Length: 574
Ligand SMILES: *[C@@H]1O[C@H](CO)[C@@H](O)[C@H](O)[C@H]1NC(C)=O
Ligand SMILES: *[C@@H]1O[C@H](CO)[C@@H](O)[C@H](O)[C@H]1NC(C)=O
Ligand SMILES: *[C@@H]1O[C@H](CO)[C@@H](O)[C@H](O)[C@H]1NC(C)=O
Ligand SMILES: *[C@@H]1O[C@H](CO)[C@@H](O)[C@H](O)[C@H]1NC(C)=O
Ligand SMILES: *[C@@H]1O[C@H](CO)[C@@H](O)[C@H](O)[C@H]1NC(C)=O
Ligand SMILES: *[C@@H]1O[C@H](CO)[C@@H](O)[C@H](O)[C@H]1NC(C)=O
Ligand SMILES: *[C@@H]1O[C@H](CO)[C@@H](O)[C@H](O)[C@H]1NC(C)=O
Ligand SMILES: *[C@@H]1O[C@H](CO)[C@@H](O)[C@H](O)[C@H]1NC(C)=O
Image (cartoon, rainbow, N blue to C red; front, side, top):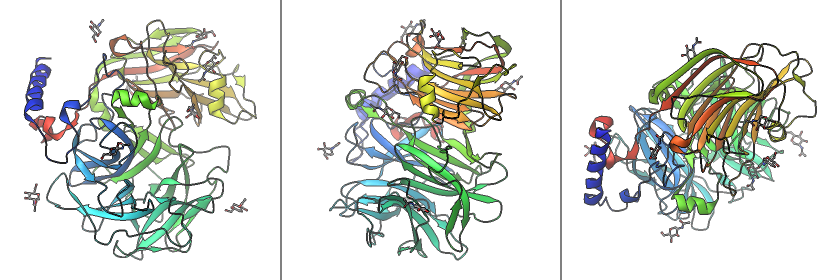
């Protein structure tokens, strides 16, 4: 603690002395930190800018030992507007250094906003950014920016090309529906390809562009993919995954041993499809397609949007970032002084079944784990619960494996129960069952007036068991104005073996991973009572059948070091 106070003092001296370079808009004095009294919902180990509005993650990349994250940022307030590219750098994807904005609206082709885009690493290792500009006529166009000084390890300054805009809305492209270029990939013909999100004749479309030099881009006569079951696709992402193993692949890898994933953001959700890509003809074949079957695959069945992946060549993995919106109102955001989180970075890979992706928080997150409690082989009788004590419940990482002894009595699954989210609101945590609901009550007040229930229920289906996973926010907060709708999804696991849950709790966010990352649900909650040390976490079973915890580990989580550059201690930078 002494160390902490010492640094507070040093920082206060900084506050007084520091004025900041011209144009640097993270005002030091208003840097917000978690505080149970006036910032109880600020997070401790999720990425947030010092203050104000943040939405989509942009251009994540790894370059010469440093991770870069850019993000849609309003330097002036906690609501959307004046969008520029915020920029932060990290050596470990956990601790972040905020530096000056990388791209600001300054030119006729981006004066109304520097919107989302992606980074690509060119041969020779040089990074470039493609981003959408909202131009002086409010048309959407695609632009390029490159680092000014490749010897600057943080790549602080980016210069926009004289050739901008590189792509403009022509030949039937609606200027309002032309945005969010992907990371580029190179075909066997040495031609670069990039996809831009669009809506053509009302159909969500991934427009395909090709270039030899990254400056002159030609639109392909056929889009990479489209769907007449959805409208506008925002923030498309297109990348290969390995068919065996969890290693990630560089975006330009194609051919044997790979499948390709296309993600599109629409209806406030991130949906994906898995298929086969043939670079010779630029055809992408999928089955099922978006919205085709009952299984509508999503990265996350809670609050998670406009996500983007990148290939981390240092650890040979593909990492996913997603924007986690607030579920409170705009006046609350103005009051808090901030809006929007990034999810924890997650490794993303093809599941063993080949039918879906799985995700897991990157291993570096585990370096924040502190005090640990452990228990094995504990029975929880129907209608009972117990508290996990000895950890900081409002800032925690919890892993638990459930073993179900007897599934004979499982409730019957009705064939018309197709919508798991609806099922979770009908059969919420308070509605008793047979096999479940069982799981955890997170960010709970001592008397349970407030709690968020993350739980499972097992049904007997036609020829197999069906596992439902829910995050029920109904009683998450005494505050009325918060959106408390329930989230839910099915988990493709065999409950006879085990059902596992990992939940990462961070004051106003609960990121939950069911079935070892097969099903992810992120919730935002704003407790009034269950804050700071008044927050508890319980394991509960509201089914009639006993269940057994085969293994439970829970950790307090340390705060991550997420600060503007001038507030950091030297040793942590080097
Ligand atoms: C955008 O910035 C201008 C000042 O540069 C400010 O007057 C305006 O309120 C800002 N809009 C938003 C939504 O932040
Ligand atoms: C480029 O960055 C390096 C490392 O920070 C610095 O030493 C050099 O002076 C910079 N060059 C220019 C032209 O700014
Ligand atoms: C939608 O597109 C599919 C092919 O992708 C086609 O078979 C079908 O007829 C189309 N439906 C409509 C309503 O346009
Ligand atoms: C468990 O069920 C009982 C009876 O239906 C209910 O009163 C209680 O609130 C439920 N527990 C939770 C955590 O929802
Ligand atoms: C609350 O959130 C749900 C799920 O994201 C959404 O469907 C619903 O429209 C939201 N309700 C309001 C009033 O915003
Ligand atoms: C919360 O639960 C109550 C009682 O079950 C229900 O009437 C209400 O609709 C639920 N609210 C939400 C947002 O699900
Ligand atoms: C809880 O935290 C408050 C300050 O945030 C402190 O005053 C109080 O002593 C703490 N209570 C316990 C039981 O640690
Ligand atoms: C229990 O889970 C923890 C965390 O996943 C793991 O490290 C430990 O080995 C497990 N213990 C047993 C007995 O399975």
